[in-house]
Length: 384
Image (cartoon, rainbow, N blue to C red; front, side, top):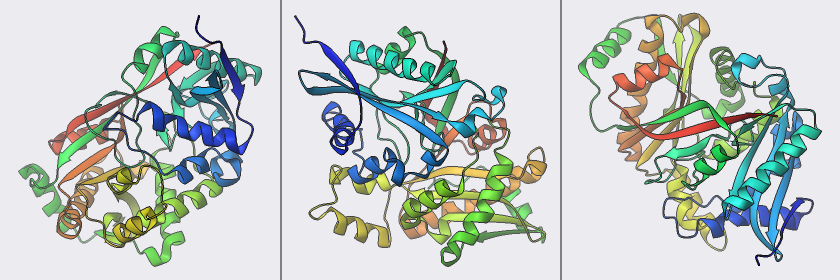
């Protein structure tokens, strides 16, 4: 007779460590899982170290058999998400769950039920997941693209999770894509003509960011982001505590020539953020910076040589989104960063995403560049 399953809330530092450690065992034989740095993973679930908790609350749970951790989940409520229009995905009554891992379907189902019970007790009427934990972190369950590792800040999962979630009564509410692009290949001639036309327009300026003015540049990008993404599914505005934390985490992999701001008549109207794929550097570290991992990582950060560049965020102010100018600015930024990514970092591949399935503009840009969908993530919903 199998041992009884125990579900309990995470309460101590030891519990949080066990929560972080579980995937290292579950994915030990998966060559495409990238072990996160354990310190970073602990920071994400520690309220004092994650600005997201300034407007959210969460309860983490562990599942155990005979004292051995066999599963985990986070149930959480983002108070800002509750204020968003329901038509955009969240809104009143919306709770979330994420960071789900389990040895088998029985554990998985029990943990989902536990998270739902907690969410109901907090007054929510529906659950969305997996969202781990902020929409800006790792939303969605990987359902296609298991054959290659995720890039920085993207998730991985076991293929069987999809069936387990759907048998628990969840239905798909949103599909997210990432696009793969061989950046060594020149863009199609139509794109080259659009870029050339933009270069001849004296009103357009595409500039690099200045990392020495990090806060000022971040404020410019945030203003464009909040305007550009305001109507998107799942949008929740970033708060200052989150921005501060993101700045600390991302500043080491921010390079002036990989982030562009587009100005029109001197006014910032668009941006593109590109990150060298940090996962390529941390994968061999197995989650630990000691004893020599920190030195290797610092050496890599001085001037990374990578195969892949990831574009996690692009945005054009709302007033331009239905115009030809939006696409022109996007193609110009992509092309300028493409050139530098090859020449200065040795990159050969780009990944764009995640992109919402109904983001017609961004999907059209990706397709025009002859890029292909390489990973698909699903967000699920269940009404109580």
